[in-house]
Image 1 (cartoon, rainbow, N blue to C red):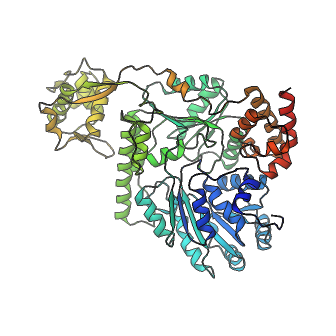
Image 2: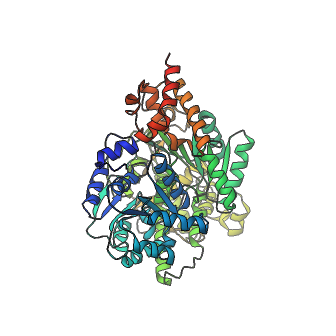
Length: 610
């Protein structure tokens, strides 16, 4: 800090290279500097880390940042050190000697910001350290992990309140999350014992993200078509199981795609190696389970494809939100199959042993998980605005038309499904409400499968009554009826279609209408529109600057985006600065990075601008 007292704006420019704060950031920073607790609910890419990093540099003591993942800590500390800020992390990757050295340097005031795993908080050596230093603030990152009603509960987070109680005085508390329903927000505030916190919700809308749901049976074909159309882009493909990750990654590599993989079944060494290859763009496509991603601050992720439907909206929003962290346009594509619902239901029904929960609480959590799965299924099958669906789930209400999702850009027509719906209800009733969606669909379509013969459904009065209706359409109508409460698809291990109080309404004189896409064409200009760049820039210069960035990244052994983000390079390519002063005006260029890299980048810009 050089002994010179700086204000929050000078800190923002000097170390982070920004001229102004984003929505919500300044309110949280001012609250914390006044010594009051703050709780930020901000989407991925909204700049949550600056909300605690700026006040941490202005406070007299140390800021502890409690973080759930090693990758998140490493990434944040690397970014801070690149900006000229002394920071460290304390986790299981350090040897005993490194850990003791880090604590010693922290005790001597070397670090302003220290990232720590929640499991370490109540360990004897860490407590001894915490009791003898001045802790100005404790920040809880990924705060939804403290809520047992959230999608990512971690029991170790419950130690945070106990740790605060052991300190000689209570520091300022701040908590941040990107995903939280009202129930989870309330649980976080209570569990962390926040005192009259300033709650700042900046909104869940990420306007640079394009949302899309595809139901094409050929998922691999969809992926290859996308990767072929966007060969220079980096992205993540999420799969539901390790087996799918292995198979898909292998097929992509055979087809010439530079891909790597990540799941919990790999060794620590291989996971670290593969993650590094992705971060360095050696393998720009990462195929992974949901074990990958939290805390990965890779700014140039241009797409996130879900090869399978996730279990809940919270997980989908968080995972899809890893695209476009730099604010540039990015695609979020979900490849939906009804079989994904069956797999997720099976995973939810697996017995979970957790000493923290009573039998009743475990059952309640499972029921909530099933309800979340139902909402996720509704998202995949709705014809309404996809962005609006997500925002409404988190309590925000919009116009139901965003103009930037596959549903809003698809022309729909009303299809009269009254007769088909009546046939479905009649079939469910005639078979005694004993079978699932597949048996009902095959019966109505007139399949001669062995399973139908075994169940006696080939002799059912409804057999073949919808033989002229395509199977995919029958499934769509069953899903529509389920979404609107005309039937119930049970949440058991083997889901069964049941009737409801609304089932008889299908037989009223009023026609039942369902919106369907006018055309089933998947290749359209809308996808291409979603990838236009948000600024005019010299692409040839941008490409040269990327090469220089990669050289520097290899020399310093840091991911390229930590040197400069794509957004910063595009801004350089648009501005074409000639002097140090002009270079400092580039988005994301602070004094430290200007001093380290300015000369090299200005030389390339000058050479290419001749």
